Image 1 (cartoon, one colour):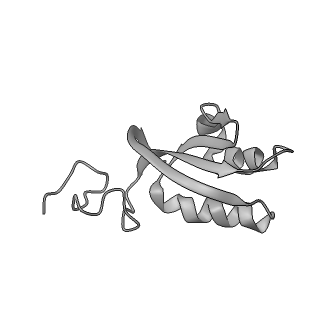
Image 2 (tube, rainbow, N blue to C red):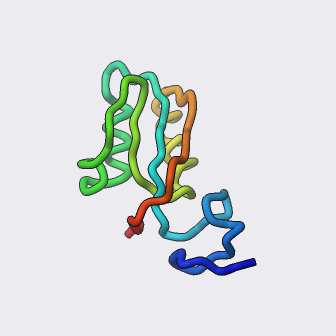
Image 3 (cartoon, helix red, strand yellow):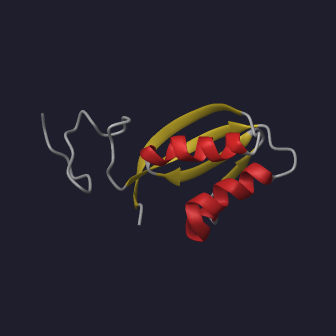
Length: 99
């Protein structure tokens, strides 16, 4: 297996998987029914003001940047507020780093 330029270095087979505990950041889409905007506030609070500024509001959800290991935490926060998450889609890795 080949080491990558992930921070910290990981085997390439771990990148983008549940074993990816690097600070690498991915674009992620959360499909959510959010008529009152409460899910958007939860996501924005989670990712912080810098990333919230680049969060994209879509017809049925939100797209933002975060590390893959944060996805279950964010889904848990949304579920705790009785917000249904219909789908989570991980897009491409970005050049960002979670700090």
